[in-house]
Length: 235
Image (cartoon, rainbow, N blue to C red; front, side, top):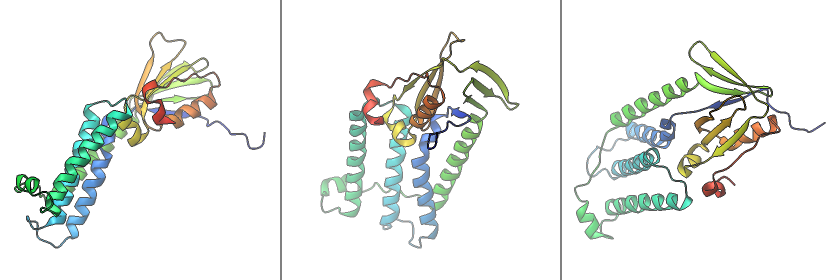
């Protein structure tokens, strides 16, 4: 029929390592490197913009580490973490920009001047970027491919393939970490293949809602379950 949505010939399901969630830190580090490379102001305690950049970088870096270290299944935990990071960064920035507003805090942080030059940010950006790129490339050598009549597991440098029948496949979608869903809309896909006794779990699948919709359209019998505690986040 005219206007009817066509299913794609295949759907790729790739499980990525958690390092991909560090892209906010990479972006901030790269921006800091570019700015400091062209800034003419000396890098000392009087260079307020450089201090502010360092505080923002450390705040984003700390938040990213929390994302990697813990799972946050509830939106309330997400709000608490954001609030704590915002309060700490706000106090530090306020003590740097307006020390007369909070003299006690400014006095305590008087010796806190996290200053690093452009070379540090360039080194950090390049090393993190290359590590992330390498992890993405490696992940692309071990992925799943869904077709209308079969499910393929492609793995290895030489493209070894395991084949499974796709009719009757049941899929569970779980979003167990609100942070990770907000960063890459990622979650866990659990594939239940009728010919296999054990379920197949794919962690950190990006744009999981889009993948789910495509799978449902391709395989009309697909069943999907959403983690109840974070269902509201995906709506």
